[in-house]
Image 1 (cartoon, rainbow over the protein chains, first blue to last red):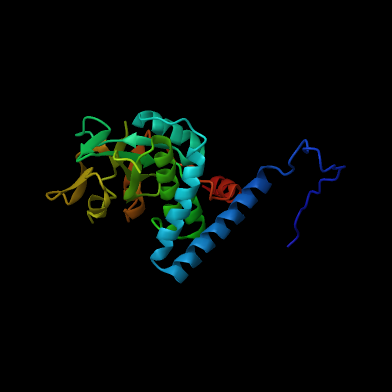
Image 2: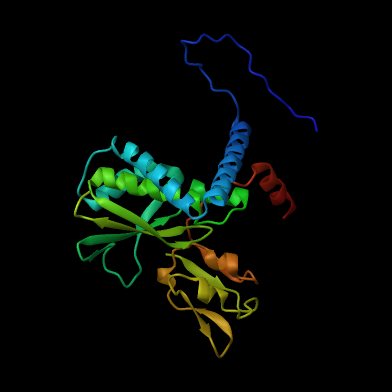
Amino acid sequence: MEMELKEIRGTFKPELIPPECGGGIDDYEEALHVLMKFVGSMANALEQVSGRGANAIVYQAGKRMGHDAGKLMEKTDNLENAMQELSQILGKEFYFEMWKPSSQESFTIERSGETEVKLLFRDCVVRQTLRRTGLPQKGPLCYLLYGYMVGAVEEVMDIKGKLDINHIGPNACLKTLTINWGGK
Amino acid sequence: MVKIKIDEDACVGCGSCVEDCPNDVYEMDEAKNKTRIIKEEDCMACLSCHEICPAQAMEHQDIHVAKRLYIDRKVNNTINKII
C-alpha cells in the first residue's frame, strides 16, 4: 500500500513558536483514532490485569485530575453555577445538561442532608473511544470521567460528592450526582 | 421536545425497548402485540431502544445527535455515496 506523506520543510528555532502546527483535518482524524485505540487497549488490559479494581484505580486518577482542574475555577455554593463551571472545565466534547423526569418539579432532590441532581451526558469522547475500539460502556474508562467530574465538583463547591451511573446509551448517558453538604 | 415514531408494520412486539428504556417511555400494547409510547416527554434520547430493536422500527425526531468522531470520514463519505 502506498502512503501519501506531505512533508513540512522549513527553518525552526527552538525559542520560536511555529506559525503552524502542521497537518490537516485528515492527520488530526488519524491521530485521534490512533489515540482512541491506544486508550481503549490500555483500559481493556487494565481490566484484565486488575479485575474490578481497575475501576477504582481509574476513578482515583480521574478524581485527582478533576481536583487539579477545579482549582482553576471560581468557588461557589450554587449548584447551577457549579454545573456551568464544570461544563467549561469539561469542554464541548463532554456536553452535558441537568435532566429531570416530567413528574419531578425541580432538577434537584433533597434527601437526608444530600442533594441529588441527574446529569445527561450527550457528547462524550469516552463513549466514542469505546465504540471505536468495540469495548462495552460502564468500564474503567467511564470511571475516569466520573472521577474527573466528582473531583472537579468537590473542588469547586468544597463538598463531598459521588456520581452513579443510571443508564448508558449510544447517544446519551444518565448519571446521578450526589452532593453531601457536610463538607470534605 | 423529542418526537418518537414507531413503525407498527416493522415492530415485532418483542418488548425489548420496553425492558431497556430507563424512563418507561414505552409499554406493550397486549391487544396488538406492539410497542406503544406512553411517556414521550420523559425520553432523553439515549437511543438504547434503537440499538436493541431488532426490526429498526424506531425513529426519534428533533434530538441532539451525539458527535460520532469515531467513524472515519472517508468511510462515511463512501457510504453516503452508495446509499
